[in-house]
Length: 264
Image (cartoon, rainbow, N blue to C red; front, side, top):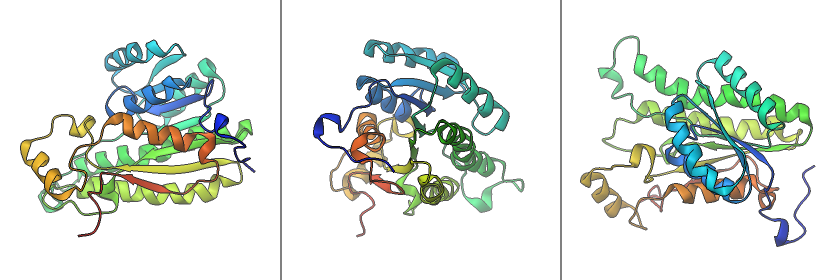
């Protein structure tokens, strides 16, 4: 059983915890890393672009904790296993996992090549990669016997249809990730491991770092709050879901999109 908080003094106490963040070398992943580092969390970044990771580590260094990047391809089981093993040797127990790695694209199904190569890449990265990393880190959390928190970064596209954007492969993977989150909350609950997801909309990071004017206009027209979100706002929600204040929350998919996905 995960005990409840007894006062607000301990509600967001994450100091000294270790978080693994896939794709933490930029975009939303780096925003989450910064948010956690600011509260005293040690951060292990898993990513493919190590040059970009070096820049991310420099940004994290101002917070004074322990930060390190590890080369990892989340779609490769051996790469994931080796990276997680290296994290445990460098940091010890893993307390928080943020599954953030992802890619967009895919295009219209009927226009795709017969082998559906791009579709498979999207689904392998956005869904199978999440499952692969959870498999490795989840076992470590279970065996350590100290519980843990897993936060999956999905998308509001997992719940809505973005007309005219050719996001079917991405949306399909993210819908699967949402269902995976709920199923894993049941499977890991007996081990005091909580599993939740954040489903962002348009964010000024990653895919949305340099949006077109047409996309800005669409957001302005369809979203009640009329702006893109920021990576730190996703980070703040990830901190909450990983913290003691969320000890009674598991299996939830929380949308943060400024109201974009509200029904008409």
